[in-house]
Length: 280
Ligand SMILES: O=C(O)CCC(=O)C(=O)O
Ligand SMILES: [Fe+2]
Image (cartoon, rainbow, N blue to C red; front, side):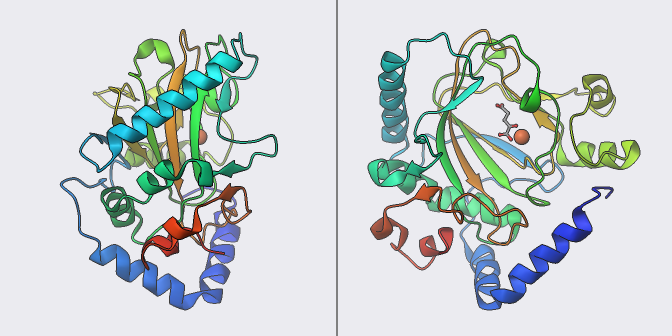
């Protein structure tokens, strides 16, 4: 694995685990006990696409998101200079879920936590819950080009489509985790952006994965293992609820620990499992 900074990152992670050994073991134990739903994220793929309608309260969550989006769009008619807007975050990038406890409850759903914990081998934390709009644009810069997120060796971002995501709405494009790892090794890729032509060579016969989704579908994607981009040249807006599940011991300090995510503490302390999601 050629990622240049990984030895340093691994040391930081080991130190963090050493500071919280009981917590570490608890997260591993819970992960192995969490009842698995019908599907799992394969370690080879690093991604899973599935409808989320059957999760308790899902329809209300989608409706809530649509309400927030309509309200935001009425106040911000556009056109928009930014490529992406996280409409729940305030000017200091703080998201207060106490006004959106329905989203917090969804992020804590046992089915979702089961899938994510099974893949990560530990109960993660919730480091971000955002309603993300990406606006029509003609750009291919930054995260609109292929890259790997470098917070850790693994993490799951769950992208929930609030409206259909088709080819016109800047879908995510990605390689499986396995294909990405072959690329990293062969190309000695450390950090930064990767040209499309290079990625294409590793996409195999089936080609690149394209994250087109029906409204209500979720895409679980390990953005730290899978080479990906998105929001490139959207012809129309793309509407996602994005929930980020990193390890509690991620070398790069997750946003929730940095106090950029405020949560409803009653809901957070609903069970010994949910209280693991928001460490102090
Ligand atoms: O907007 C997109 O689809 C890309 C986002 C991305 O790179 C990320 O969330 O890690
Ligand atoms: Fe990314």
